[in-house]
Image (cartoon, rainbow, N blue to C red; front, top):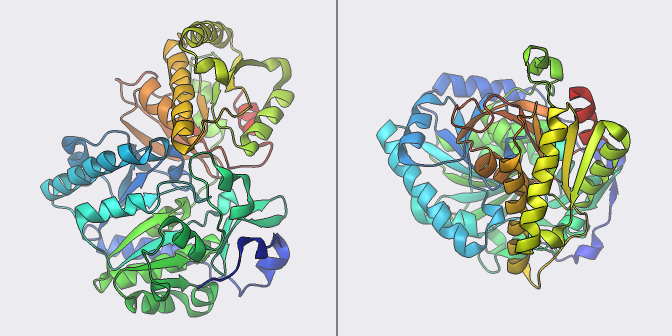
Length: 482
């Protein structure tokens, strides 16, 4: 059990830290795919309950549902191969609303899986910087489906620069691995925390739930020296009611863990997962492919000559930096419409601002200009976490209304930030089922919804996480797609 104060953990130099680790063991992803192909359709489907839309950021050729009625779920169980995502957007809700939401989804899943004659397991895909409803969400899932042998906590996400080494979770900033509890993410208005060591984080968020001896680490030595066999052995030796901390510093580490996990599950062990995006693609054996370009999307065959629409609601410092780079890079080729966040929470003033913004955006898009609609960069907070969530909901609702009122079909849409992406996809665009085509940049999911009932069928939709990508990542996408 960790006894360190978080201040005892210091930033680490990336290159020196990684080079001091045991050598990687690559090539396991293809083996996972072979294992799953061999046992399909008997292998359990993976149902990923995503607390915001960014969890699709390592996947391609997989469906994401934004509704969970029983007929839709039944059809997806029958038609999907490895599994599918359900966008719960639960990170945008207070705990009192999360419980009935997840209970309903899980109950419908149970009925639909029985109707389809399928078995499945649940992944709660959460934020790689540890924000979200933990331990509430896995507790709710266990209430519906029963106890498992252990929970698995795996926040590693390579594309976002999230590493777990010696149980300490790090966020890559420039060339340094910064303990997560010492980053701006830990000061989140709704989901703040202090601990960078995941053992301490578990105790902080779920005090007394897990005994020290039931917090079990899958170390990088286990993974890189012992391989899948050692992972399987440790998983099979767990006490019921344990929580497993997965260390990882490369995607191959998560692949080895997944291979050992599948072996343990084949012998009857059952797990519930709270992970970042990397685990999902490893467990499904999805072979990575490069980010998709404008040529891949074949804009040349699209007769729509309007501009692209970028909607930014995220307040994290990385987003603010990326927006600044976008604005300076595109210059007069980009029309910037900035919304005062304080105005958006004042009902009378908000409606007028929403109407004027939508009218201007429609005109500019029709003229072939790219349009950035962004909230002012000063974060408006409430007096506590719950009221801050409420303010965020007001701002998100305004962005939805603006999108709904824009009368010009954009060539593409980029939504910046998890809550913003979810609300734009579901409420503004009416998506019920979309396909994840791949990524627009590393860790940046690209969706397309072809349903005629959606607002803009076939328009590429980029789910751009607030906390992912280099300073120029957003500008590079807009530039290359212009």
